Image (tube, rainbow, N blue to C red; front, side):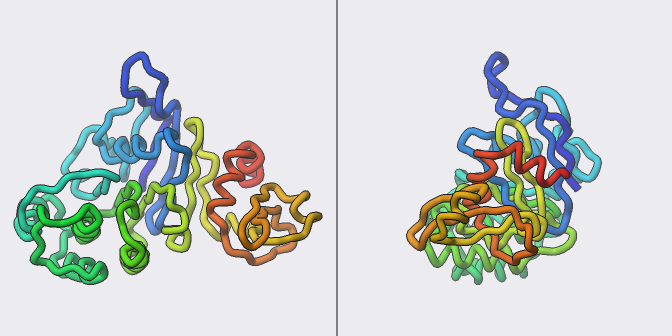
Length: 279
């Protein structure tokens, strides 16, 4: 579906590139978690994918078409929800009238269903909403456009606890085999159980781009007080319950992915992780 090929991008001509010779493949039919340090280029990558930024070199191909050309057939099938945005001081109905026409698969029925998940009605005045409510309304419209590719940058920022719970239902109930959703986030606990795949990027490299089941087949995650296990772990981090560890899964154990531990492991031992999964 999506192929990012050797892109280089910087915001100023002589500044250090945010992304340098960066490549990534995304397939349809999954929710991707995009993880990386602050400044790793996650938001920039989403804007490049959406065609809102132009790479200095390389290309972003969506279904074989270059997104930098901003073709109507491409723009109508990609939607991006940035971390920060503004909405006009108009009713949601007027907003939909002005914008839904650009998305041929938009559905009023889907919009009402998504708003209902968040406990919101369709007769909203966008100018009277809090930031969290605006995010819920905008995400509801984004998903109702039924684009093949949905990009979300820190979507749970600004949401209260019930809103985060509703967000998980919102995403889980709307995945299809034809759609891909990429969620860039630092709030890993808000999305960890939603994800089908994890992308970890650092220093313009993809350290990991694998399905959850592939990760847990190679690595095991659990909490322990055993000094022997802790000392032999690939990664260990004290927690309130003991110590979270990551070990090589050499006995076909079935454990639940700890996304925070996986991310920290990738930053500490990225080369080891790449070698383990590329073997």
